[in-house]
Image (cartoon, rainbow, N blue to C red; front, side):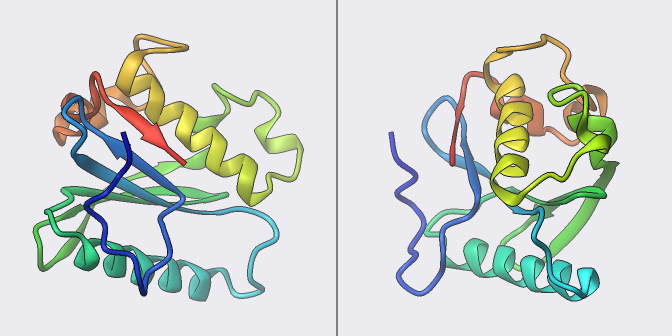
Length: 154
């Protein structure tokens, strides 16, 4: 099952795509680990612009998006026109469950992407925990219900 409803001729593919149990994209993720830009604020702004490009390029409405860097995980909702920030988590608080030494080492982009994919996969099929970090908040916005039974794609 491939994420085929993204028209990405002019847009790079997101770092992680999460599909629901019916194969519909419900979440896209943009991750920024080391090496990072010398201007983290500008890197975040550029990443959010890329997220909007992904969402606008999709044939279907993708309800959620996520930006992840080494400090924060931001969860957004997309209504087809507006991107609204719903949640913010400390990245270390969430991902230390999957990498206990998160604060003691450099986390490069590819590894950060893998850790985020592991966390999201826990909402899909509970591979590590039936109660992943931030479960309550993710459930309150309706995202965990969409992810249940789904899969992720890097």
